[in-house]
Image (cartoon, rainbow, N blue to C red; front, top):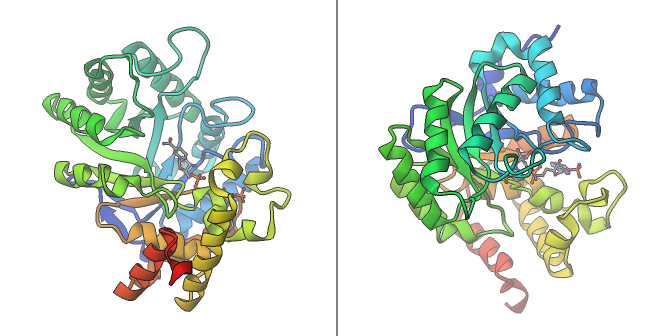
Length: 335
Ligand SMILES: NC(=O)c1ccc[n+]([C@@H]2O[C@H](COP(=O)([O-])OP(=O)(O)OC[C@H]3O[C@@H](n4cnc5c(N)ncnc54)[C@H](OP(=O)(O)O)[C@@H]3O)[C@@H](O)[C@H]2O)c1
């Protein structure tokens, strides 16, 4: 029987999520990949226990996580919840989402009230939970009135099926509108889940100022650009890595010759700071005051441990920050 490490809360730092009462760990853990048939349940447990033992209290899921079938990640997490994690439920922040294609017909996708409420009921069953801590609308729906989607989120909170609600992949203007509706409904938007990493900096200009002004927390997914920012692809695509798997978008998104050159240069900065490339990439995301948590994935406990060292990493000097910006903007080679 699993028994959590006694010193887990000494190892992690926690940040307040926007202007809410909730603290989240600086590093949170997502189950998008590696938690269905890719690994045995024992291997999955090993990673989840290592995460919780390190003070990671926040686990992120979605209705559609799992290969080959949507929902498998929630089912497996439910098994771990039932058999091992149950005594720790009140120490955990568990999130799920709906917004992408989940079941056949017109009610299994996007942002209708019909879809969101049915989907959360299914997620709760798969995970064996009475409620989730955070329920997200996973992506904006251009056709459903925002009032309907946000109204469904608010009702879900009133029904006690989620404690807080959030949005993901919403642009700055859509975010402002959604936040205003949720506030008027009396169920404020807790958090925005956004793709932000050294290759994807758009939120700095548009979204971050909105989140700060509105007091909404921010959790950044794919902070390692799905592994590209660990430097491991500088040696090519090895078997077993995410980029080697069928259907992966990693290669076209993050492994162009220019991006690989950028990672090569950043790796030198990382070494000068006494960090691995992965640790540099995570420190860089966490340097922003708008960011509550980095939402990582890992396919082994070794990766997780390497990444967790970011908790005690030093901040950036102005010189380091400028050097990194120059590398990211492609100015470095011309100097
Ligand atoms: N809201 C959304 O639309 C959305 C979208 C995507 C993700 N998410 C959430 O964000 C979570 C994290 O996303 P992500 O998995 O793309 O994050 P990530 O942390 O950028 O990438 C994780 C992957 O990188 C590799 N990796 C991690 N640490 C490593 C290390 N130290 N050395 C070498 N390789 C390492 C592993 O892949 P391999 O070992 O398999 O190569 C690992 O599975 C997801 O689980 C999900 O919860 C949300």
